[in-house]
Amino acid sequence: MRGRQVVSLLAAGLTVACSASNSATGDRAADREAPIASRPPAAARSVSAATAGTTGIGDPYFPGDGNGGYDVTRYALALAYDPRSKHLGGSATIDAKATQELSQFNLDLHGFTVSAVTVNGRPAQFERHGDELTIFADLRDGAVFKVAVAYAGTPDPVQNSSNLGSYGFIPTADGAFVTCEPNGAKTWFPSNDHPSDKATFDFTLTVPEGVTAIANGELAGTPQTKDGKTTFVWRESNPMTTYLATMTTGKFKVRTGDSPGGIPVYAATDPRFSNTLNTLYDQSARITDYWTTVFGPYPFKSTGGVVDDFAAGYALENQTKPIYGGFEPDEGIIAHELAHQWFGNSLSINRWKDLWLNEGFATYAEWLWSEHRGNGTAQQSFEDAYASATDEIWKYPPGVTRPHDLFNASVYVRGGMALHALRTEIGDTKFFPLLKKWTADHRYGNVTTEQFIDLAEKISGEQLDDLFDAWLFKPAKPASVR
Ligand SMILES: [Zn+2]
Image (cartoon, rainbow, N blue to C red; front, side, top):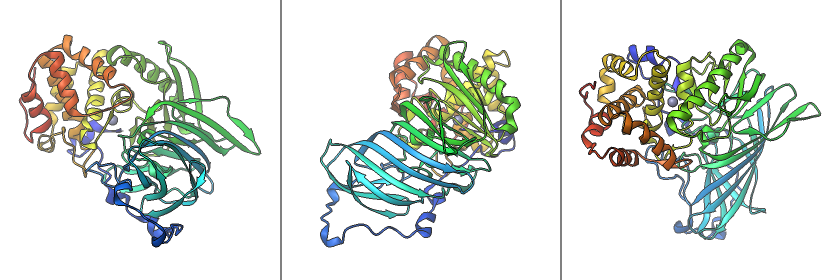
């Protein structure tokens, strides 16, 4: 993710974007819809605490996010959306594996009316509490199971999050703008909504004829139109975190092809931004190709970008299709979002405290792109950032993000500076092989800051505690590097 105007925001001493805490998501759904009382009476149940999956996955920053007791391998979403009525409905079928003996488990879902749940094809009892959908089913440890949830309603995105504004499933005049970091997936499908549980995705999306539905991965066949409705089938066959999933819909002009390096490209722009389609296409293709030479093989089957007319004021690195909210992206922000395909998307954080592994790397990628284009070296970008950094950045160590200020400028800029300090210390002959080894070792997996530090020390043969302490963990201004 990146705010549109990171440089001017920094100069003004503001943060780039803000946290989206659980309190921000609130309990609106619970207020609006009565919980469905389909749970058997208490006397009929024998729920042992030992076999109830926990209501959170264990991230202390977002205790309600994700769930315990199982691991999702695949989501199959079959959804219809009507931009006129703003009605979203259909089913989510989830393949998962129990990681403990279970008598009940949770999915995260905000709003909607759930009409039916099945587990392995059999009707299952369920209940709602806030953003938790609890499903009752007896599953042995290690069991592979399939849960299907039928649901419908009007999506209720997260709004007025202190500086992210809105996120999740956001209805627009001609469709919907769907960006879910950090925990907005639950505003459109039931999920294990935390980046530590990655899965593949199939999307079968039905919209009125004339509307384009864009999801992650690649189109499976030509969209089919019948009775005034068109169905788009998209497949993301590589693991993806829930916050990177999208079903952005609306009127779009689309261009497809292959990058010079042979990677399929899908670019789409809202009619208001149609004059930027070719630039978006060309730059996304060229930048993806270049990053393969710096970061290693491209992790996914296609690349691209989407410009919608919703004025989000930010861009999000949706897997294979970064989305730019209501502005014409420049090369720097495209370089940032495409670098995330490696850092954040292929290699995903295990806990939100390590967000600099996404944002620090993507910010440093902007500096590397500038260097590649002859528009100023990374050293110059570092010096500019160091000179203009506010006290706020020096007080906020980016190695441990703050849950209520997740997207602070420090996580981006001081995170990027940390990587430049590392490059300066170990030299280009170690630094660039380190980046490629990092992306190769953890391709499609989850990562922690400790793992990165260990690998940097292994590849450089140096003890780097002082460097990382100064740049990532101490609330003080480190010495500049040259
Ligand atoms: Zn970013």
